[in-house]
Image (cartoon, rainbow, N blue to C red; front, side, top):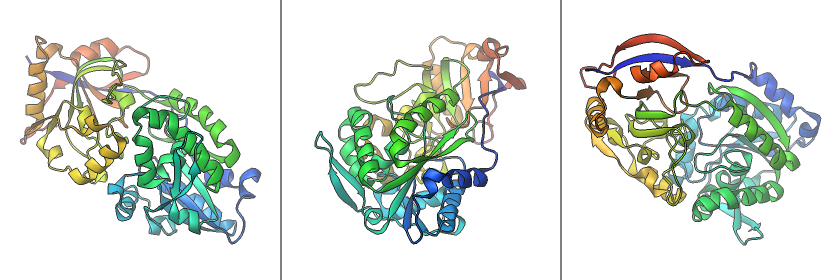
Length: 414
């Protein structure tokens, strides 16, 4: 008996922005936005650590419009503790995402120091990047709005979180994450709104992506409307979000995990696992074993999310920068997500271990699925048992017929 697989293609919502520069120009030049930028001002544009489609281009075009309106612009990393919680490390993360001074035609100014803006009504100190606070006349928040990988609420990943954790650098990230899920779900929105009100934020640029990781919405939002509008854009983002074609999987093989695919290495909304102390993993899909095969170069050794897997390979393990990963996971306080699973020499050994753990299921009946990463799941490899179940569903197209699962000379999947 052997595992036979086929490649299928899923169809998701495909709304997209066809002309990024023109759209950014239109949004920044809206009457309620452009009047906020005065000649001679120095404007900070935030840039996070996520692999956002067209992020470098969007930031470049925002800067271009700021300069057209007579102001100066610079880029400030706003990514909490990422990049090893160092100023240089955060610049390296931006470079890996294509956000460079040469491409964006603006300086990148990075500093981990913060200033305290005050305290929330609950007594939580609120911090803002010191360099921005002391040298900029205004801040433009830029971020993708989407479902969070740790919790669900009115505000998840977006401009409010960027204002709170991202723009508050390592110190704010530590402060909020000290409270676990309560911190990021309940305290984070209050801190973010405080920064938006008191941190000289001019406006936000909200980005929403479709199911193909393409830019679907770019919207400039005035400072006093960010809190309300983000809720509405989050609902749109959730409607666009893709998912795996079945909710019951024995073995999910993930070619590559990484910070450029999700803040948690693998998007928990896709794999149905949180691995957070005190929180349950009783949502879909139901996956018995996850194999994480490799780590993206763009992660710079940060393998946060490896703890979401059950098995991994030596080639992933050998790429881990434990200092960088540990700094990130300890700041988050969700320690299980950096626990090292069973390490095997190659893909074949990892598969054999997962198959052995799938008690009593013949290879030709195993519910196996393979994806490139959790960000790109439009094309998926599925085993025969899954194929029979989904091949006639709307939005599913078979693009490669059944064939044996094969390995190369190094015993890694071809």
